[in-house]
Image 1 (cartoon, one colour):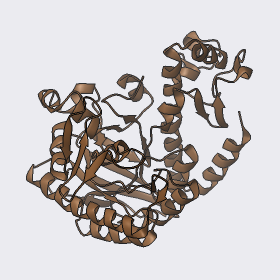
Image 2 (cartoon, rainbow, N blue to C red):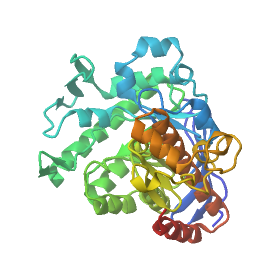
Image 3 (cartoon, helix red, strand yellow):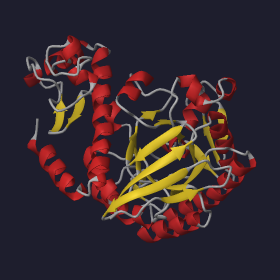
Image 4 (cartoon, rainbow, N blue to C red):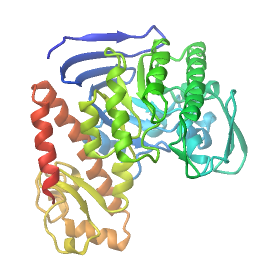
Length: 406
C-alpha cells in the first residue's frame, strides 16, 4: 500500500515531522525530520548510556550509517553534570555526535536502582527519592526535573518521566491493581512532563510512554490518555523487564498498531534481531537495545545465519570473517573485501577468538562494531523490503537464514 506522505507536526515548541510512505500489513516505512537531521524508519538506535556507545567511535557509527543514538538522562545528570553539559550547549557537541539523538527520562534507571525488592527508592506523587549510585547522595527526580535535564541535553527526542511497571518484585507478580496504580501515576507524570517541557520552550519533541504492565486493558487506557495530550510521538514501555518472552511478544503484538497512525511509534529496550523484525511487523518505527554492545563484550556476535559465540574453541583456527555477507570494518576492513586475514581485508574469527582469550580491548571493540552494523543494516534491509512491497517475503527469508546456523 502507498498511502502517500502523511505528516504529523507539533507546534513551534515540538520540532518533529513524520512522513509515512508505505505500509505492508501493519509494517510501516517512514521518515522522521528532527532538529539535527533526518531519520529513515524503521530504525535501530544504538545506546550510548554515558554519552558514548561503548567502545565505538562516533566516526564508526557514521560509517555504518547509524542515524540516531540514545543518551541516558539519569547517568548524564550524575556525571558529568548539567553545568558541564550546559557549557557545551548540550550532548551533541559534548560527545561529538552531530546527528539526531534521543534521551530517556531516567524512569527506567530509577526502577532498576530499586533492587529486587524495590526498596532502593521511594515513589510518591511528586517524584522519586533514591540514593545516588555514584556517591550515595540523596536525590530527588520528578517529571519537571527530568524535563529540565533533557532540555539541557538538547536531545531531538525527549521522553516523558514515567514509572516503569515491574513484572514482579521480590518474586511477587505485579497484580492488575498494582499495574493500574503505576500506570495512572505515569499518566499524571506525562501531563506534568508536557507542561514543563512547554514552559521551558524546549524546541525539540516530547514522546509519551504507554505503560500498563502485562494487562492489555490497562495498556489501552494508558494509550488513550496519552493520545489526548497530542504529543509528537509515543513509546511502548514496561516490556523486557523480566517477563517471559511470550508475554513480551503478546504486548508487542497488542499495543503499537493502536497508537496514532500519523505519529512515530517507539518500542523501548527491545531486543534480539527476531524481536526487531516482529516489532516492525507489529507497526513499530523505532527500536533501541543494549544487546548488540553488551553481547559483543561477552563474545556473542549476531550474523545473518544465526548467532556466533566467538569464545568457542572451534573458532581458534577459523580463517573466515564473522559473517561473509557483512560489510562492517571487522569483517571487511578498510578495503571493503573479506580476506579473513586481518589488515585491510578484515579480521578472521580466529583473530577475534584470540583477542577475546587474551582480554585485549580490541576484541569487544570489533565485536561491538560488527553487532551494531548488523542491527543497523538489518533495518536498512527492512526499509528496502517495505519500499519494494516485499516485506513478508523478506521476513520469511530472514527467518530461514537465521535458522541455518553459522
